Image (cartoon, each protein chain N blue to C red):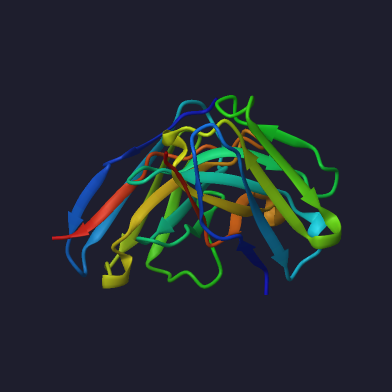
Length: 108
Length: 121
């Protein structure tokens, strides 16, 4: 199985900050990497697919990059509604699409 | 619009089975696969298994292989997840999610609202 490792596992930030979350795959997954946002008590929702493609309706302050084994999710200008947990997911190993352990973002 | 609506919360005793449904609408059911993902309290997302809604083919995580069954009813556009031999550690929110394969990269969108399964004696 492909293992996904996110860092950090948690972070504190302020409204307006620029933050970056990283995700590393245990083997090359090309650009088959997705990012999800989950708010407490809610289902995850898709933010970015294919490493850098913004899902329709997602604000442009979210961006993704990377290929191979190393990926990043960047939020430029944090908004209050962005404080949530973020998960990466590999979609290379069809259909066993494993997730990272999550990164919880809290208000500083 | 595309919607996945799951059945309601369940409380089960250890050793029992649970069957959760995921009713889909807003698209051609047989064109897209459905995955099941669970989330234990305070934990991350765990992929459980998948069904090709067209062919009925399934694949399960090795962790659940012996006690997980995913099925579908094409006439009802509904997918089912049945987990047997429940233990307390199976207490979790269970999600279904549609696999969108368009535009080259596969991803989960949308997700069902989640179903809380509580295993307790």
